[in-house]
Length: 585
Image (cartoon, rainbow, N blue to C red):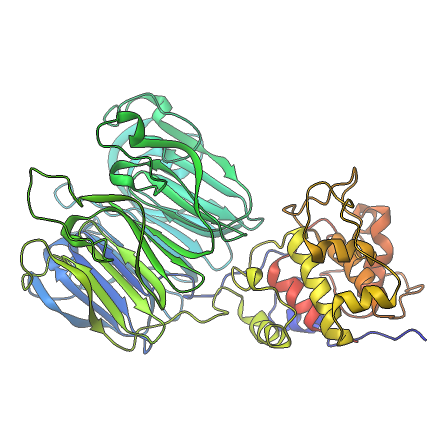
């Protein structure tokens, strides 16, 4: 006897959040930035209670402290969610989603009190300002609706991404200007911008100095700022399947959905980390195309002269310049201007374990551990209490730091469902995070198999045996994963044709509906003759998807908005996980 599916109705969850089921999900306020930041001779840290602490050279940032310099952290502000640091300026995102800035803001050369910029902000990435020219720091502002805005000092029109590339006189654009929609992450380097769109694609524009965009060699010199080939004023697609990006000093680091870390651009002092830098070979100063650095990476921070990466096991790795002994890991820089010994590392060096977040500047490094403690090493914002050369060993600076939660990257409406799904055990580890990204075909398929195991209480091998089926190792030419082969044997997926599965392919709502129908068939659910869904845009769906859409609508598993289903719209990780969690077999 077939079982009837009973659902907790994902549509109710979405309606409560006032988010159309087919629309790209909004970002959560104040929860996608970093709790720590470092830049030109100063450091910032946000504690769990929302208090912001600062130390270093106040003449560089003029954030709050009345004296020009302080070695000890001082409390600067309350109700803070996250921070971003730039040369001479800082950006502060408060818990209510409001964005504030301080330092060189382009009005009076450096206020000692923060200035409010705008509301409903999810993330901000800030670049440098110029104190002498009264040029404000440039900000890329990502709002909660996924729109991207620019504000601050403009050095050339290419920063707007609107096709203009003529270098103009420097000026301050103090009223934010909208650039584009559909963005989930942004990072601004010295002169280039990188964004991740909601489908997981990575795009870049701006200055291509030292191959920062990863699109091939730039043949001009860095100072030739009038050369049109140095600027790319229109966004260029770099790669797909990206969940995290960090832009540094004319270079970029990106984490893909499989946890692999890739880098390109300025390779001075081994910033890329691929081991190719040779100070005597100019050809190694730049990496023009993305190269793979390592696997199993959860977070990355590209800085001025050093790269920091946190792996999924909590280990922290660093590479690049070792000024101030800021690499850590016991690498000591002998203070001798005539030697290059230990001046840099072009390969990752392990620093410590138990880390959740890290950041660095030219001579400073800092990391937050899982227990909420903040550790610093190197010059520690040019601390006057340290000998020349800085500290090569991490020193504890603060306790009670804000530690990112496991579901901070998800929208608020999805968090309870995500927590429940993870506790049930059907969410693969490699998709536990970056929840607003589009789920890939491989990720969805593997989760469907895990869900079958949880729903039946049996291993997938036992399910296959009961149904007299077995994996076909030749089912697809582009995958060998046992879960995907099991899904094919059970009829959950048939691939995309020509014996291909396309594991990294984008996943749409009609594909999700069809695979949910097929998954429910595996556990013996009653899937026959669902009533027509009545969506006004069913003519946009492929013929093979109609039954699946009717089924998920009839059982309240998936719904639409304003009478439409948007069958070829994107489907995110959080939507997929919550959908499966809401099916009660």
